[in-house]
Length: 206
Image (cartoon, rainbow, N blue to C red; front, top):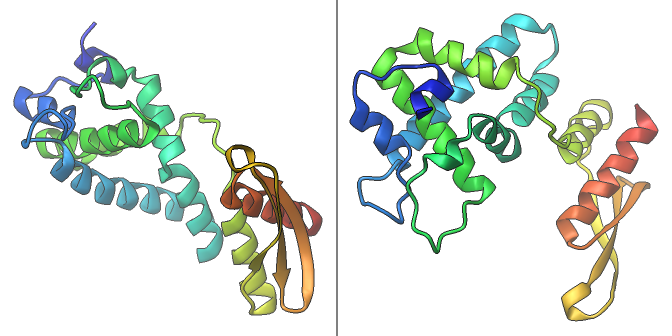
């Protein structure tokens, strides 16, 4: 099975498809420019379809779009298409989620240039909008949208405790809105602790 069989699209320009799957570690003629184009097209198509499908306000639509175009979602879509089998990358490079997501965006750019907007919109609907991906909610974004809309204030994350040895640290964070503490969270990094604090806060208010 070829990459064209995996994605269900036959390219007119095979070199364009090859470039979309070429990492910068292999060639100067890599997929970075196509990734730039694909990112813009993906944002437009997802935004348009969310606007037409849901009567939500701008904040909710923004959070939904963020979940659909985040690295986790794009990497999951790339894995479902088995893109890792076809990506041209140096052996010592890690085929990370960000690399997979970048190749997926580059593929979107390549499909647009080769087939046009209607074909690429169908591809995005099939692989992103109508597909199921296990992606963690953007808890910090949800909390911020709620607090700004209902209180006019932004959440503030405060590191309150740092424990454990250097190689196994654990962080505890509180999230405050104005003079009120809304939630606590802990994690192996400050970022993960902030996410947990936001998640705790959101589950209390919704």
